Image (cartoon, chains in turn green, yellow):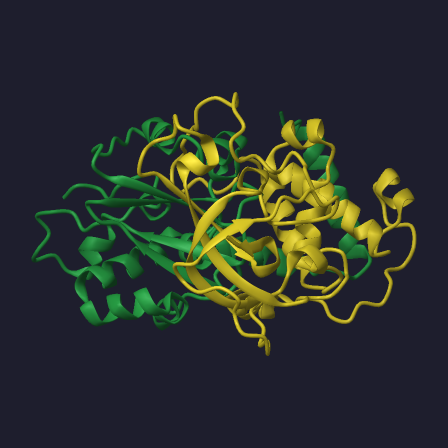
Length: 193
Length: 219
């Protein structure tokens, strides 16, 4: 697999060439990394999910125009220009993959994890999703159907998992803390309270 | 194209190995790979579809033995060469040997948050009405273009049902090759797993793809 030293030298050289030619600014490169390490990640999506669990009007807006509903909370842009929210129910569990590359809803989930981009996940999610879920330690009842969504266009999918039982009097912040990244891809479930 | 990136249904890659939510990069060069790919992309020298094609057209053995950011860097080098922004001798010698060519815009640090939060929309107004409606049965075309396409091999020549109509979107098949946006209606098409994988497939399992109108015919 990756020859880290070789790649480090190759990327370092390429970065220097691009800076020297005036195509990129070093400070802009740092700002990009900072955005995705600090500001844009799965806590954004968790806020969307927690809001939809507690606010029926918001949930309705999320169903009909997810891009606008997500933008209401301040999340928008690259990799999330055209959003669709998929609600899990006891009968139906959604799982999102991009078999052709690594399309992922960046504004709400941040950068995709390595496994999401891996051949193991991309190859098997569409043909053996229950096996993939087992790799994550998730077993669904046989009565729950699985709907896999292969992200083949610029439309991006956010799974809205089911609200855990026993959280009736919880507020949005408490609920958001239960929403894991994997539960918004479909490879996991929210943390039990 | 029928490249190594079209992975749906392949076997033998082993289990999926999860990782913690706060793990963003596995080496510092991956941070730089992400940053330069996005920053140079902002120059407007190529489209997202062209960059996907640069990645998927790596030789299969190389694609499958490269990590994802390695694939990005190898593709970025191809794109820079193709756009005339960097020359082959510069990549070989790992050094800038001549001044940069004029570019329409560069990305400043102060513009980064707004640029990322704005993104790029891919829907376009079209005059033609949508050919299909939710609930219609359609068959995906059997086709094996040598250029870019977003119709995965496992979903070609298969019967499914229109689940969503998204509006008209830029067509990757032409846009990847500088042949125009040719916006077309985009649909989510849902297939029964048995249509794709045969009788042994999980009953009740469905797989959906997003498909442009030219990928579909009525059935």
